[in-house]
Length: 475
Image (cartoon, rainbow, N blue to C red; front, side):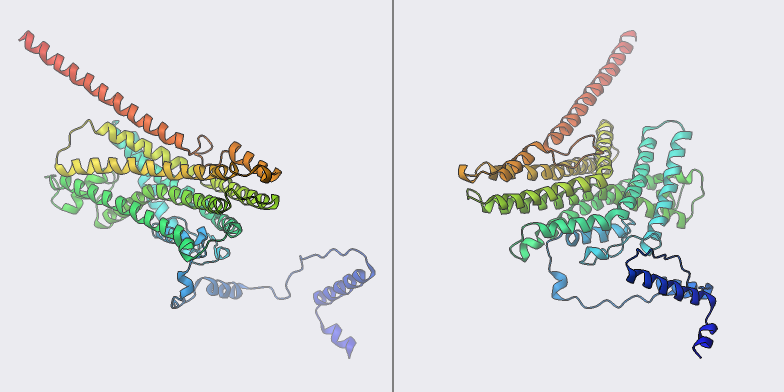
């Protein structure tokens, strides 16, 4: 009976059993065994199996939200928890399509190209890409005008920013896992208020930046309505508004209500990305400076105390971990930092150049100066928060200088050398470091540009007045 039952098995199954018996015998005798995992399954999956797997993966009923508990409102003090609200807001506008951002465990983060967030990002990128192509083509084919170049630069900048955030989203799960490990290795925080301090600071800064951005965008709409209402050729106010603001699209395509609102929708997303790039650099800088601040607070507790060499070795290792984290983060976001600084400087120069022109109404005047103040304030905020990372990385030297003579050791010396010699800061594509000196350089460049424009404007006015006087003399 045993021979009959074995003979009834398929040939592939018998060969598989013989290979397993031979491998087990060789393993018992002490010979090396190389296991091959290229064996095919006994049953080949057909299209029914693939369809069931696809339906089980993507066609699922949404889970019923559970009631929030007390643990959901408590913070562990990690950056991943503090930045969840900012990422949720970003995903509403098709940025950072990472799944699992609301989970407290960063190991649940994942990036997939086939998620709903990803398809929403693809849709918005196609729309913004269309506006970018039309604005660049309109600028290249028509008579040169500076405002057309500004429009083309605006949409090109936002399209590239979406691409950079998409690349960052692929690396975000691994980056947050490393950041959480560093946060867990830092000195513990005393109470829940300290653990929630970073999250509240990030929320307050996000609300302030986006509220100012929304106010600026609403003022721009109010200023644009003035021109649309004064257009005698178009009687529909919506059509006049869209044609006056998106002439680079409706010069080549006919107007429809659907096209008008879709164009405005992509324009709103671009305005959000324009402000979110600055906000993202600010939030990252706040997280990194908070990590250094935790180390500094723990060191200041033991100021003027005689500590062991093991203590200074542990603190130096924690400081080194945060420095390595800054380097890793900078490798991921240095292009975004460069985008933020270059974009703000470009539009500040554009607005300063436009300050020489007269404005038709009081609303346009208010919008112009409000926009210029927001641009300058946002540029200074990005530079100051990013420079705070470098400032906090230098503060441990204040404690190391107060170590008593009998408490000085080799680890403390190595710690002091690292703090004084290393430049720990975010960079813009490694071209420059975000330090306090950069703030002074940027401010000086803006003031110099303003003075040059004022002098140039005075020379033009004097030339015009001289021409008028010559005409009067000839008469």
